[in-house]
Length: 500
Image 1 (cartoon, helix red, strand yellow):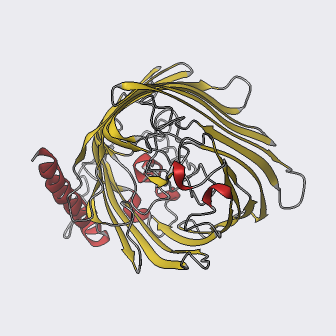
Image 2: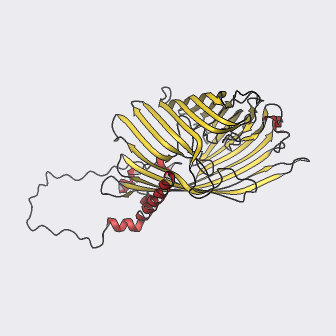
Image 3: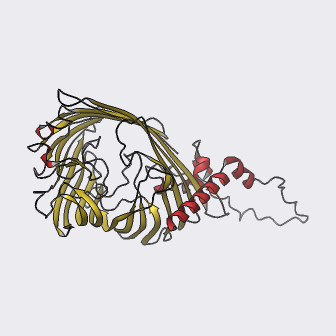
């Protein structure tokens, strides 16, 4: 009942904000009809021109970028009219209350035609599937002051033309994606404090483990509390939350029963990099209905990790070391994962090519008959483990991916990569990023899963429009030889995103 009341209230607030913020209404309120200049004074006043100074001009600052999560944008810089140069700037800074209060409207529209093909054989039928994914986001950010605001955002995910069964993230007709109140300590003070309460996207510790997963058709959110405390060079962030269920109807996404999350992370700039970050984190998860090849049951995980990010003029790196301890169906659960990416950019060469190697490895279960579990739980990850396409999840997976990207134009990236996959343990199967079992451990033999060749592009056509594409062709290995994907598979995806 409480969640439904919040949804209804958020709808009313968002609708009111969008109506009041319309250009015609805003203009009529800022320039009232019939307003007249005050009458001149009847008695001349003494002048002191030597003591009067002209008002200093407003400082022109850099425009903020459009971000995948509009809740992280701050358009206060548009208070200066000189910074308003875009067609949508009227919607990004709408003043109210006569002080520092303003409203920001936001939206994202994404169209993605996508499809895959499984090559058949004499005993395995040919499978081909093509479908059209759509995602719509509409948000309103009401900033009462530099210290307090209320953000709300609605999401609609739609799929058309899919022949097979839809994935849980493909269809979510219309629902409340984010609705939170945020309070922060006054900017400029030595100690930073930020409190966010409500439905929100979360990234804590490592985006490899906690992510909104923007690559999916409907993004992930949580109902909970997030607290950030910062002093000197350290920032400590903590959260307690419930995962939001993705239902296919209208305004029916309630907190998912049986899935609880909590965690804390401490971060500071890395001492060896100009643009670097060192993060220590602990993440806790309880899922009363987790599914592994061993079976379904209550999974309690305590995840300890360290992340190291860094980028210089030519070299960059992104490393995670992770250990898990807990229980599954009252038996011990122990797991681990390593994730690394190391890149080098030839900045003085034409098109600035960047060569990189990505190595990921995560443990899998040794024996489904043994109640002790060694399968790694990826928590709430993005789709970046298995190359740009995200074909597999990290559980029981070891992959090595060499890649190279070039930049023919400042706003255009072309990339080539070749992920190579092995099972970490022959006693476990293959999973997707949502920990759904794709292939059981008895479906084949050996560790080698296969190799794929991927081509991808990223084109930032304008400030508002981004177009990305990916084509993948996978050659299956021995483990998949007798499955429906035994002869290999291909996939394509083209995304067009418009943001304001």
